[in-house]
Image (cartoon, rainbow, N blue to C red):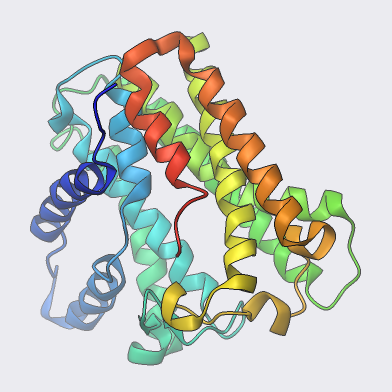
Length: 299
């Protein structure tokens, strides 16, 4: 099997999404220049664009006209960025650093950071449902994509996970609680990304379910490995405050299993995810390579 350069692969899709975002995210009024600046600050703070790469990779199993995917990939990245801005707020995790830079509220103030997150969240759905942008996307497909994103990120998904995470701080909680947090706060959106590729690629219901489950498994593994990195890495390596889970007295996989067993569980999830997409044969290789990367990264 030929070598797969994952670094260049991720960089290619990152540049594609960044170019689209840069052209799209313009001030709407002289009165809201500061809002746009705050939005752009976090969107272009240096993320790997892993979620867009997953969308493109899943879509590539079915189709090769990638330009029609880009607005959706950009929308998901905007929504993901909103969640990071709000996650860092004093009322949430109260973090000073994100990707090695001061967090949004540290630069622009708490009120502007909240509004920047709100704007990015709503902007995501604006993009997904704009027929003038998505000229090659059937209306029913746009609706399905937006509806499932709302489920994955609202009170049945990411927001529910964040709520449970906050409630678990400084409390004695069980493993079921930690699993719920990880499945909803992180895995739900990643599962949506891989399912979205099947939606946009005209995959059938079975395809959508396989890819959604794939994404959820690597999403859970991703978060478990984040728990490990929080314990084993430095602030410089992570680009955010290390040991923050311990300082905030959060229940994590490492709390229950320790580092070695947590890594083992994450690797088992990755193996299960990879096995689940064998049915797509060579077309699934980008997804497989991203899955492997999930538990080998250092930040």
